[in-house]
Image (cartoon, rainbow, N blue to C red; front, top):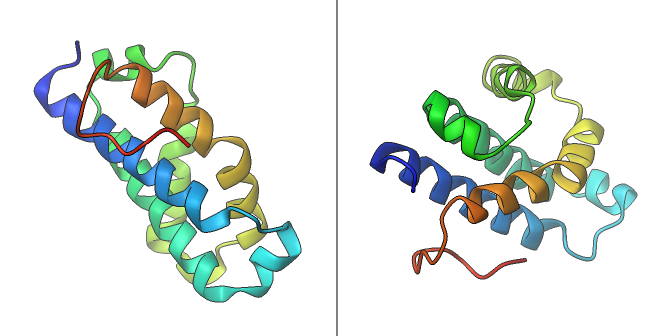
Length: 120
């Protein structure tokens, strides 16, 4: 079972993953890129997920397995400090390829937790 501070970060990661899945459901890459509001919403949730991941203790990170934490920190910094230059094509790839896996791993680290949104 994760530490209490890790538990909150893991729950936030699951919630962000769930929101991202809902925001991009039914979208193609082109439709996503044409919808600035959805781009902004997904980018914000990816940012919040990365912030939560950065708050995990080393033990919390170990619970999630082999994840490139350096890239997550870099993504968070890119969004926070260079939002105007964020490549939404990369955000799309992250949202489709990495966010679901991170959310699933965070969910698995919280067995039986009733506070979680339904699995996507």
